[in-house]
Image (tube, rainbow, N blue to C red; front, side, top):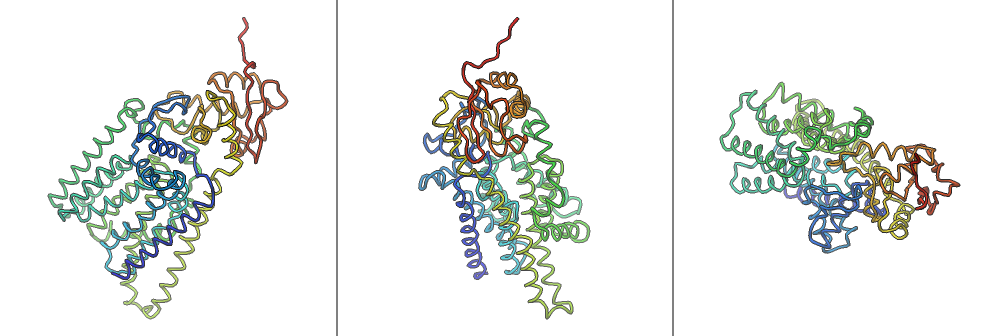
Length: 501
């Protein structure tokens, strides 16, 4: 086991270095939500408190969220610049997941090579590797916490691990709503154990019931305002229906398999079938329960697509280790025993082709979505040239960038909770970018007190526009910035719409 720990340490260093190399290949961050957390980290760094009252989002609003992740990144910002910490800390947290997977697999397999191989394989789930490299996402803290809680549960019979489990559970519950998946997985586990007529230890049952009620209480305590305002719709975060449908429409079975990796999907599903219908094993049931919980939440669209695929991929990787364990023990009983080294090499090649290469390709693909220098210049122009009280119209996927980089009010961003007119705002912004009527455009701008329009390459592609027709050659508008596909239009103050009776 000692050599595997050294090998794991080397693998973690290599993976961490590869992540940082890709992350620092672009100056900005990928994804608009990353800039929300960047603002939170900057505010914590300056004041010690999160930015709950935001004067810029939707022209002014109040947030309700757990700032644990932002405090973790802000702690890193004490010893390095904020933008550097925003890249280093999430990648460090994501790399630590390898160690936790190593510990979990060591509980279900006694073969050191299987444990090490699975831990390295877990670093190269394409959706996890690609979408956590250059973005500030609480998932990079929540998912490692989830798997640490699972590992602590496996050792909950030991007294000191029982306390570690409770501490980790409390931290996890107040970090991310993903703790609700843990509750669902525990319930599935208890059901599986009862159905298979396995004995449940009293301590195990008591801790499970405590965990369920504590997590439910903590989530209601944190998000009761959302629940009271939106009811069951809080699950979909008040996302307008037109936008919600588009988020899931691009995901197909083949896309999901590619994002997770074909090996863990095929053999993870095989393990689920084998142990549900043919064999009994309490620890495997525990892992299967959480795999089923993640799959069901993803199937019924009760969890964001990327997050659901990340979880499903990690759980299937752990179950895949169970298959490797079985396969390694089965080979010596066959005529292929002398070909074992060749089979190991074949498995390694399959791992590279289905895991490493797609992960790196996905990472570079996401990296290309990071804000380019021309985009940075556009937001710099807004920050330095637009009036301090100006409101900027941008697409929903750029609202947080307007607030973080442009430091101006936005009309709309992707934080829809507690925004009763989010659907109307999304519709109006769509009309503003698609209309050819100057009067309608001015009326829409005045409705939200906006005077600046940001037209990015992504917005042009979405609305199939190369420019705003109503703003070109118009006395009402002036194109004040144009670079690299980014255009900024400003409405003149004297251009208004009056109702004449």
